[in-house]
Structures are given as C-alpha cells and as structure tokens.
Amino acid sequence: MRHSLRMSAALVLALAACQAPKPVPVEPPVVPAPVQPLAPPPPPPAVAVNRAPIALCERGVVQPGPDGRLFNHFPYPDTTETALIAAPADFSSDGSCRIHPAMLADLQALLARANMDPAVAGKIRAVSCHRSIRLQRQTFCGGINPDESNTFRERAWASAPPGFSEHATGYVVDFGTRDRNGCPDAEACFAATPVGRWIIAHAAEFGFEQSFPAGNKQQVKWEPWHWRWVGRTPNAPGAAVPRALFAPAAARFPAFPNRPEDKRLRAPAAPVQPQAAAPAPQG
Image (cartoon, rainbow, N blue to C red):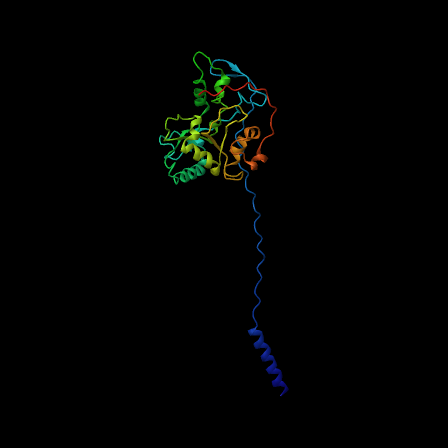
C-alpha cells in the first residue's frame, strides 16, 4: 500500500513537471543607436570687406567706407550660374529669370496664391532676378551720362555698383506687372498698380522682404518692386544662408516688414559714416 502511494505521488510529480510551462528565454535589451546630430547648414559665401580703392566704370577710382559699403551699398558675392535654376515659366516666359533653388517653393506658392485673386491672376511677372557682377557693371556704368554730368553717388542712389548688388546672390526678385498702364518697370508707380499693392500686402507671407522701403535711412531709392527672399522663419529650409548674407544690411537698415525674430541674426552695427545727401527724386 505504501509502495503504491509512493508510486502515485511520483507519477503526479512527473506529470506536473511535463505540463509546467517551459521558461521563456529573455532577450537582451535592445540599445538604440546613438542619434547623430543634424549637420549644420552650410555657411554663407564669404564676403570680404574690401577697403581698398576700386576702379569703377573706367572713369575713376572710388574708396569703400570703413564698413565696406560703397555709396551706401553693402558688398555681396556673385552666385555661380550652375547654382541657380530657372524661375517658373509663367513668371518668366523668356527664361531669363534665374533664382536660388531654396526660394523656388515659396515663389511658386506666392504665384499660386496670386492666381486665386482675380485682380492679379496671371499678371505677376519677373523684371530682373539674378544679375552677375559683370551684368551689374553694365547696368550701373551704362547709367552714367556720357558727359559725366551725373556722379557715381547719384547713380548709386538708383543702382548698386558692381559687387554691391543684392541681385548677385540669387535670392532677389524684381517683380513687375503685365498690366502696366503706362507705369515703366522698376519705378515707384509700381506700388500703385494692382500687382504692386498685392505684392506689398502678401509677399512677406511667403518669406520675402522689401530691401529698400520708403524713407529708408540707407539713402537708396525706394524700390517697391525689389524683394529679397529670407524664408518664412529663421529655421525654414535654406533660409540660414540668405539671412546671414543680408544680416549686416538688416541690422542697420530694417527691411519691410521689420521681422522681430531676425534680431538674433543681425550683425552689430558698424560706425555710421557721414553721407552726402541723396538727390531728390525726379518727377
């Protein structure tokens, strides 16, 4: 009897051992790979502050100021043609407008929004975009009268000397209208056209700012058609480079609209040099 009980107990223990769940092997914890920090944006092209005399238009030698400006204009690097792309065809039908790729999406969005407004739909066009230093030399020097009755400073009130134009960066667009009604391109009357009013009201929504607003203390002609792209926010893709390029100008001569968030990007102001009075606008 005892022997049977011992056999029964052993059988129960054996059956229990067979039915017990097998231990599940514990996998070692997975250690995530370290997160690599994002690469910083590429630095903007270096702009050397040239204080050496400059031969200009084969008509004289001029001296930049201590801050590198020449006739109130800041120096800018020339963007190579291979770094640029064509602007949208409906904006530049002849393909002459070349821009930096970083601003394309915002320019397309601006044109798409404008095309939803019957007052300006299909009327916005490019007047001028990237201008090489060579082309800027032709533009600036070609505006000097053959008899030299106007000075370099007078010419610089309306056109930047070569090497000192924002257009060289590829981040600038001169807007125009297909419905001019007697208003020439690149004149103050653009601000009174439907396209001009629309651009002034909405361009900032797409990352553009007016470089030379009315009453600017830079002593440069009011240019309601001239807008530089700096991105909708400081952290917008591609915005770091143009914001750095234009920081010295924005620090001393705020654009329109004046963006409060740009203050941390602005360079310290250089000493203000005495400037000759700008000529009064004609007409």
